[in-house]
Picture 1 (cartoon, protein in one colour):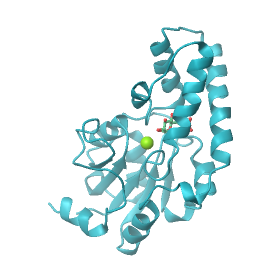
Picture 2: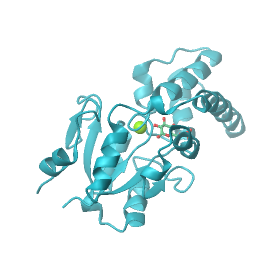
Picture 3: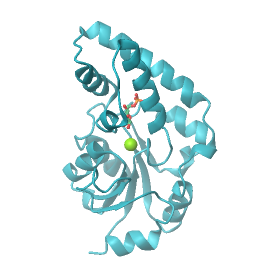
Length: 217
Ligand code: G6P
Ligand code: MG
């Protein structure tokens, strides 16, 4: 049975996906090319440097490593500027309520994000103490779709992968969860997240009893 839930951060708990997109788009425009929301899907859940590689591929640009480091820092500085102004009002609908309901039913909770900015975000939105474990890009650098982030979370919580449900908005994140042999709830577009066990538009109507019902076997 399900003993733990692992939540991605960006695009699941909080609406930071839009800030990542804004910052990447700003960088692409500065480099002289367009970067659409469709291109951006490929960046969701993917590490900062890998995201930059994909972005430069879209623009048909190739750069030495030291230039890439500079561009990644620039993007991050813009992104941090956006998220520093965040408030708890940017927690996505239903996320806080679901975390609280799951915990009160004895479900262990972990964050499972690739972001190095997650401590700042959790502090801004006041959800740090809602998790039993925090696994992010500062502790695990092998990015999704590798299963490492989620396996580390299960390990920290003391549960088996088969006992975990992962909540993800990114294709790379669903892949990572499948690679970890975990169950999955996709948040967003069922066409993009077609490998998830179930896809819901948001967490608003998701409850503990739905979790039990969906993953009962
Ligand atoms: C998450 C986001 C990605 C982001 C990555 C790294 O997985 O979905 O869009 O690139 O984290 O975030 P960071 O804040 O460390 O640049
Ligand atoms: Mg995400």
